[in-house]
Length: 230
Image: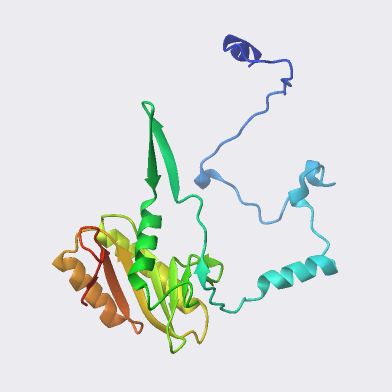
């Protein structure tokens, strides 16, 4: 190993040589599962293997565990989360180009599309801030009757993929909390909408108790969004 490092002119002054040890591999079907557990001498005293040491559950640890097990109630969080990773500068051949993330662009355009009925000032729109059981929704609006509309943004130009990917997330958000009044679930995505996609969406909508909508993102039109009638 040292000779290999020397071949590539690596600094070996602090390299520590460790004895080689065998790695044993076998097929799963050849594994023999013992009826009774067998003690491994090296682990009897828990020699430096902390993952095998049981934790003593004291008051402070119990409080931490209890806190994690409590299902947090739903809280609508109006506002907009700052996303520093939504854009970046690409430099090539001495030229710098500002690149804006597609997802962030769609979300920003969606915010403008929903304005003025829903706005940051009105405190009835939540952009990447409202949490459903530790999962953050792309955009949530609070309606006048205190019901909620949940929007899930997808960026693929494969419409079926967008539907399949978004519907699971939307249902997860909508049904995670009990007694949450949901007005509609909205898939937002670019891509060509074919008749088979519309038929698929209509079947989904007819089989769901919750209302399903699809907003096609299209920068060629002034509004940038077109609702597909289901």
